[in-house]
Image (cartoon, rainbow, N blue to C red; front, side, top):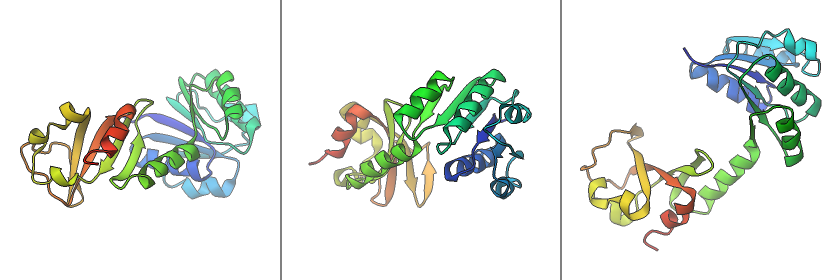
Length: 218
């Protein structure tokens, strides 16, 4: 059984999160005060409910006590964000994630009980910057505070050689997690198979080694 998640706020981020969680098998309750937004996801999530998130009683009436995770995806209404975090914790939800637009908001929501703060816009900006400032990176993702996942083309002198021959883990402290070939991702890629020019690599790397990865052969 997948996790149960309540998503408060169905703006662009909240709606996308709710739909993607649902398609991934999670039990999702999507909540917003806007009836049209709630109706737009009703057919694709487990439960879609209209509620005034500035009203503590209205949040309690949702019946969220059995949820595994709450995501407070509201940045335009601090009062609603605070109440959603506070009531989620009071109702017994073990893990509450809050979307924030600035440090002040983050500090307030942490003090009211949020377990994790996220800055989606800032993270997207950092991700785009990584891609745009490198001729090699096709995409970039943060895994945690230390690890990153980078999708990149193999360097010119890697082509025709196998992962075993290249020994990238020892040389550069990076780990090739998967190889994409003809738009198919292969996690169990044969380490003795030579890399081709039209293959992409999904590499796990520590932040401290990102520049080393970018500067190979330069």
